[in-house]
Amino acid sequence: MFGLGTPELIVIMLIAFLVFGGKTLPEIGAGLGKGIRSFKKGLSEVEESVPGAAEVKAIKEEVDKVKDLGKA
Image (cartoon, helix red, strand yellow):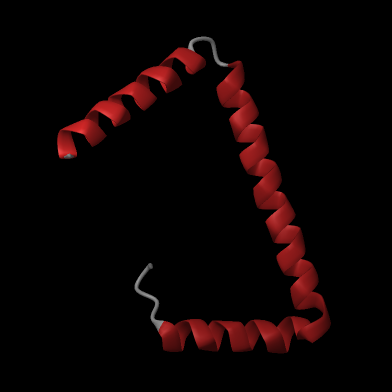
């Protein structure tokens, strides 16, 4: 993951805790989670509105099924 190991991640989390404090970190995490969820929802809405997207998805599912049959 970008060349970051456990010690580096611990140091980053410690610095974030010192900068933002214990009360605001959960709020920041909740806001970040809501933002990511909203982005994914918007992305799926755009994918659904594209003409032919449903057909492409159906074909992809069929190809995946055939691949799974080939593995067995």
